[in-house]
Image (cartoon, rainbow, N blue to C red; front, side, top):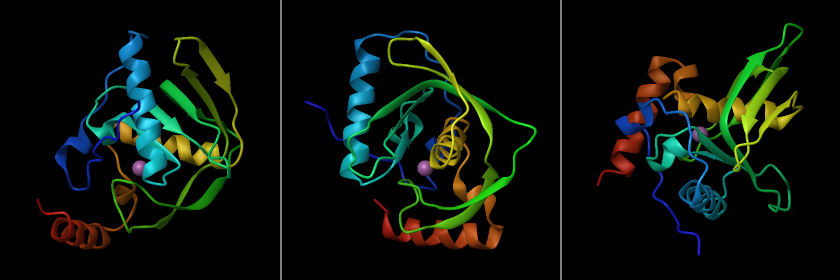
Length: 168
Ligand code: NI
């Protein structure tokens, strides 16, 4: 049975850690991916990075389907922006920044590389939502958050509100 994991909330400093490359494709990696998918579905999110559940390895889960039945797992994902890209604007949200949505511009053409849960390597030039969503999740692995794209004033406002709402 998959476990529901605790999602770190901004400005938790653990969200700023840079994740390490995955080199062991074992049962514990599979279990963590399963737990992260379960956690993401329970929270009604479309993507989740291991960093957000305090596991600092390069692992991302995602489901962009309407019926929530196409789980995807990306291990060691990386991308490069293609020369002929345009900027794609999308209103993003983040399970680590509840209640905050912001339109963010990101390149719409990338070459994406990743490994699957068994370590097999893949390359793709994705289209649409996957393109921006994977950039958001890879940001998490680098310790970067959506709030880093907005003004300091706005970021401080979000920080104060979440500190108040989620003070433990
Ligand atoms: Ni996020």
